[in-house]
Length: 204
Figure 1: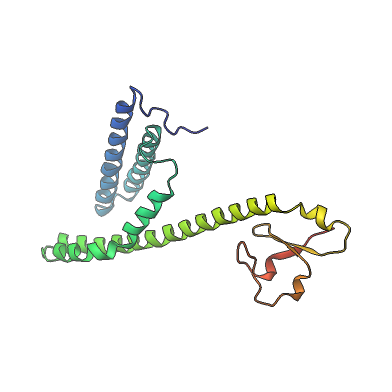
Figure 2: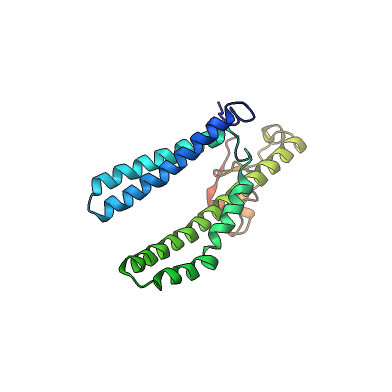
């Protein structure tokens, strides 16, 4: 059961919004404590602070969902974030150089850490891009399957006891009717684009 919008547009909305803000601030505080503890040699304490920070972050997201702070159809948000993450190189290097130019040992260490963060941002952009592509492929496959379902009679009705071979794609369930061996070696499933090796013959 979804919690989305449970307190949106209710008298409790403002209270939940403040709880969200408090938890988000808590996540920042605990992550800072983790960093400081790690620098000072408190490895176990740093791990504990980091775990608490992750919990606080989860709490903040929970409250945001209760208030419907972001749309339930979240893929447009993911696309916007992906572009921002991917463009980290366009805004961060200049700032990093300004930090490095401060010249202190702390600033030099911070600049090095910021370069690592910048690399992580780019990686996040790549991961989100893959997620978006996978989502869009699933949506297209679902739409295609719905069209096929409504436009054609069931496969078993069309081919039962006719001796016609039917092959099923193990990845997406697409059914190929005919002799798959007649297709070229580079044949791919029209839905998931996997090769002939993922098909198995369906028992009649």
